[in-house]
Image (cartoon, rainbow, N blue to C red; front, side, top):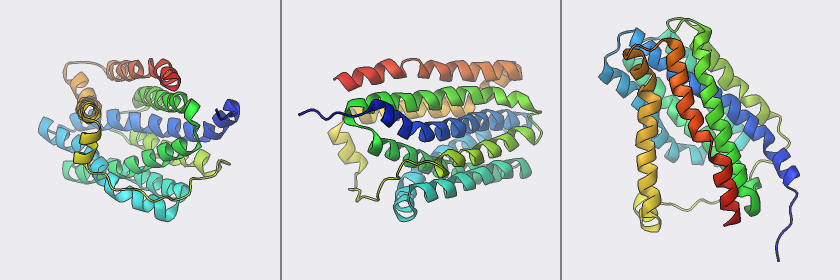
Length: 266
């Protein structure tokens, strides 16, 4: 027997999460580009810049071990609030302490917090999404994040890259992302037992999926971390760098809805 559901009710339930995700990713999109341009303007070496940017993704790895326990202990809303607040603080600290070693530590902390924020939103969406519409809902989520990240590139034009404004805007946006989640009427998921999953076991289940995830991670991290630096060093203006980063990110959003819609039919 098929289970009927009200799709409009489902979309209303996820709206606050999508809005929060959008605000958050505008800030993250700006964060990547502003840091890349600032590092280049401050004459950081290419190796130092690469290591600083890579620290963010090292934080992602750490967060996959640390954040699930935090979310189970504090709940989705409180964990989201705590991690967004810490990430907002690190944005300001980047502007105060301009040093590659300090930035590396701050990027590590930021990455740990951000993967936790993604866990909160995606696990929450997974719980409230019916099977018959899960593909469409997650495609909307990914499309919102990519479009927001692309739009965030242009905020780098709001102020001098050597000034406080770009990183200050990042902090403001990360803080504002708290508001839709804090006021949502959608019940947060109950804590559940999570089985342990090693990479070896995951590879045994889906070797193609693991290989694709590794390849995608390598490409995305290289582009997001060093794309702005590359653009500036080949002579692009700030507008050109923002457009270069944004167009590539927008391209990723184009196929989200048709792919998600197709997955719900299969």
